Amino acid sequence: MRHVAKSSMPPEGDPRSGALGPMPPGDGNANPADIGIFELIEEDYETHGRSLLSPGFIALSVHRMGNWRMGVRSATLRAPLTAAYRAAYHSVIALFGIDLPYNMRLGRRVRFEHHGCIVMGAWSVGDDVIIRGPATIGLARPDGHDSPIIGNRVEIGPRACVGGRISVGDDAFVCPNTVLTEDLPAGATALGNPCRRVDLDKILEPTASDAPQPRESSTRST
Image (cartoon, rainbow, N blue to C red; front, side):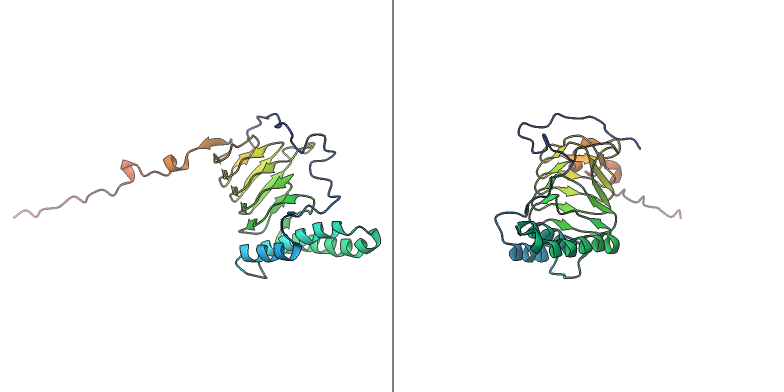
């Protein structure tokens, strides 16, 4: 598979610098700090159309509870919660095809529009992000060590692959069937494999050839 292999230097203060693995260690509660666990789950419920059976909502609920349990300091009290989380986590993968480990930091109002073959291995995902599956986010190579950071209000299209030590800026759009392995600035759009930045307004702008052609009038000879 061809892809853009251009690498970029991590920005100063990159949380991935010095990390021991491609994702946060998961040694604490990484749920958004500005909202309680029940309010957070209710917000996810609203985000997914108030459907208790939405695979995206169920996956997010398991992720939120997996983080919440890490705030229980007693290892003895946390042990049954961990067992329940692991069972629920693997059930979500088996039933819905959404792999969403708790140690991936996740913002608020994240929405999974589809389910099936969604692998979420980013370092972090911001607020108001839309994931349209299938999609793969994580390492760019089998022996890799680094994973992406996804900003706020990003949309990732079906069959997109986002991998490596890259950053996707706020309000960016990763088009369907795109392989992205380089930084994408805020507000930019990435399309294709190999990937390139595009202006969708120009691509989708009707051309003269797209305009309806007038029908030739026919006259009867008398």
